[in-house]
Image (cartoon, rainbow, N blue to C red; front, top):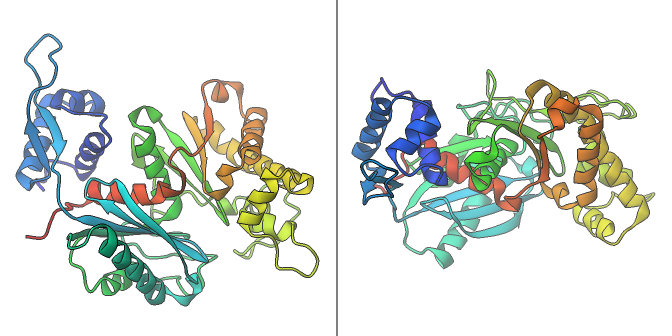
Length: 385
């Protein structure tokens, strides 16, 4: 790419066009707050790369009718997967990023990258054979349940991924996909889900704190449509924020009193375990809440309140437009409502006056959608020549 065009500006342009928030050069200039000449340079470069088409005419607002910009439709598919400790959600996306098919498969994250990515590849191949036979593979993306250095993709000190610390998953991913030469992307699951949520909600979302509350807890700040990654790409690790009323429980990171020990699905499973049993599964907990089990509802409500305690400092500091709770626990209204109640109680009124606190709109495909968006906007995903 031409050195005078920053990569972030290119990514933002593709993001606006992909989400439908912009359809013309004028829209881009307004949304990006840059000069029309800058937009022209970016658009010209993307057209030369074969990423964009400029065709037809839009509605006039008083002057010349604008030409319409759209991403070039490409035959082919994207392979994406979100990994958990015991399962993986594997998806097949169109070149435009739409979810075509998904499958849930059991994995053991402790088996290591080679074994896990082998399962991902086998599942993708099965989906492709039935849904998009013969179509080219355009990109591969995987979201991991641990800290991922960006852009290297190296896993750094994961508490719930034994044997992965220091691993370079992209190498194993390329090998699993037969040394695929196209774009490969490895990212943290909460970050991928956050950008998927942002894309789903649209450009008017504003600055958003996204929390992925499942077996563990992760978070991400999306600002101006971009993931805030921090110095090494390791931002958002709220799971090890110390919270009051935690009971000083031992955390998987080796410390005590972390948010994960009181507000995560794993914490609820341990707390609600009957004597002599390994604990309730997340699915069991969700069923019990929907059935109105008073002990389970009380425990889930308290977990949501403690999540609100941990987030209140972030809301006061960052002043986001919205807080979105995703992950498996977001399907429990009592959990989200308790988080919302505690944020209103703990945050300054000026911070919550216009704050939206909601469950995820993207649902279980948030991370898959986010990976597709990142592949489309951070790499030139086109059919092999």
